[in-house]
Amino acid sequence: MEPRNMSITTYFIIIGFSDEFILQFLVFLLVLLIYLTTLGGNLTILLLVCLDHHLHTPMYFFLANLSILDISCSTITLHKILISFISGDNTISVLRCLVQIYVFISMICIELLVLSAMGYDRYVAICKPLHYHLVMDSKLCALLASLCWLCGFLETLPGMFGLLKLTCYESNKIDHFFCDIVPVMKLTCSDATFLQFFILSVGVFVSGFTPFALTFISYVFIISTILSIRSSSGRRKAFYTCSSHLTVVFCLYASLTIQYLRPTSSINLVSNKYLSLFNVTAIPILNPLIYSLKNKDVKRAMKRMRLVPIRVSTNSQGHNGNIEILTKVCRSLHIQ
Image (cartoon, rainbow, N blue to C red; front, side):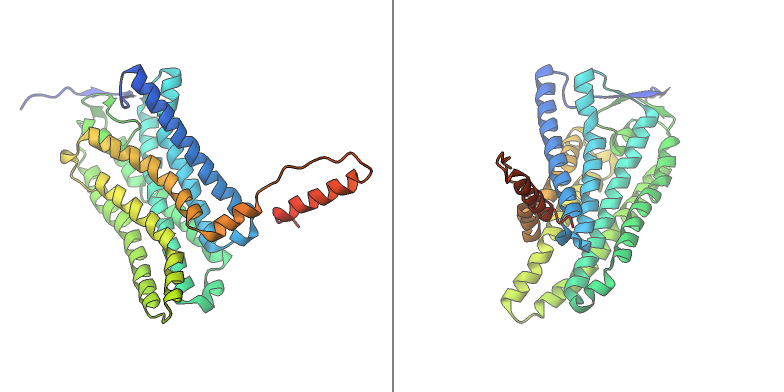
C-alpha cells in the first residue's frame, strides 16, 4: 500500500465548477439569478402569510417555516460562489467549513420534520375536520415548530463532534461549491468510523426515516379517508388540498436519497456536485412555485395585496381623497 500524504489543514480551497473565467462568470450569473428568485419567492410567501389574516392557519404557518429554511439553505450554500467570484478568494477556514456542514445538515433535518408536521396537519384537516380548530390551535403549532427546530439542531450535534475529530486531510482542496460532508470525508486521513456510523444510524434512520414514516402514516389515513368519500368532487377537493405538500415531499426525499444514500466509496464527486446544485437550488425555488401556482388561497392573497398606483389630487377635496385612498390600502393589508 502506498503511503498517503497526511497534513494538518487550517483552511480549505473550494474548487467550484471551473477555473475558466467565462464559465465562472456564467455560473455566477446563473447562481445569482437562482438565489434572487429563491429569495424573492420565499420572501413573498413570508410576507403574504404575515400580512394576510386569511393565511393565519396552521398550514401556512408551517409553510412560512419552510420559506425561512429555504432562504437559509440557499444563503448558506450559494453565498461562497457569489463571494469568491467577486473577491477572488475561494478559501475557507476549517472551523467555518465544519460549521457550514453542521448548519446545512441541520436545516435539511428541520425541513424534513416540518414536512412531517404539515402531513399531520393535513391528516387532522381531512380525517378529523370537525375537531381541526380544536386540535391544531396556535399553541400546538408553535410547539410542533419549536420541536422541529430544536430536534433538527440537536440530532446533528454528534456529527459535528465527529467532524471536529478529523484532524488531518490528504488535501485541502474540496471538489465542491460549498462545504458538504461527503467531499470532506473523502479528503480525510483520520479515522472516520464514528462519522460513518453516525450517518447510517442517526442520519438515515432518525433524521430521514422517522419523519418519512410519520408522513407516510399520515397519508395512509388521509388516502383511506379520501377513498371513503362518496362524491368524486369531494375526493378531488380533498386530494387537491394535499397535492402541493405531496409534491414537495416527493421532490425533497428523491433528491436526498439519490445524493446521500449511497456508500461513500462509490460516490463520484463531480456528479455529486451537480446533484447537490440541483438539491440546493431547485427545491427552494420549487416550494414557493408549487404553493403559489397550485394554491387558490395564495393566489387570492396575492390579489388582495396588490397595490394600485395612487394619483395625488390637488383640488379642494384632495385631503379627503387621500384619506379614502389610505383607508383602502389599510383594508387591503387588513390593518384594523
